Image (cartoon, rainbow, N blue to C red; front, side, top):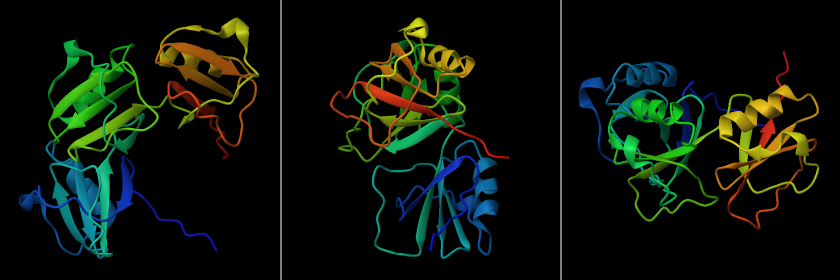
Length: 228
C-alpha cells in the first residue's frame, strides 16, 4: 500500500511544528490545508504555516531548522519559491554580498534568479537573505533559524553526488547552472548533468540509481519525464 499526501503548491511538508512566530491576525479554524496556504500566500510576512489536526491554520513569519515532533497532529508547511528546493540549515560561505539584504522570501529568490552566479540562498530568521555562488551536500543545522534554498532548473530534480562517466564533452563547459540546464535540455541525447563546484557543467547520456557522494562539490541533476 502506498500513502500519498497532497501538498499545496509552493510549499514543502514535514511533520511537527516550529513553535512561535504565529501571525494571529491570520489564524483560522475549520479550514483546509489549501485554504491555509492561500491565507499565508496573501501576506508578504508569512513564510510558513502549521496545520493542526487537519483544520486549524497557524500562519507564521518563520520556519525552523528542526521541527518539534511532540504532537503528532501538527504538520508544518514551509513556503518554497518556484524553482527551488528547501533544506534546513546553511552552507556557510560563498555569499554574494552585493545582493544580500533584509527582504521578503520572494524577493530573496528574485535576487538569486536575477544573478547568473547565484545557485542557492540561505534565509535567516525569516527576514535576512544570503544569496550564494555554491551549495553543499550537507547543510549545517547548528542554527535553527537558518533555512537553505537550492536553485533547481525547471524540468530537473537535484541530488548530491555524481553518476561518473557518460559525459557529453562537446557541450561541457564552465557556465552558469541555468546555461548547463539549457545545454542538456537542447541535446536529445542528454538526460542528466553534473554541476561541479557551482561552475562546471558535465552533461551526460545516462543517470544512475545511487550517486557517488565522494566529492561534496558534485551535484547531479536528472531530467524529469512528464507523463501526460
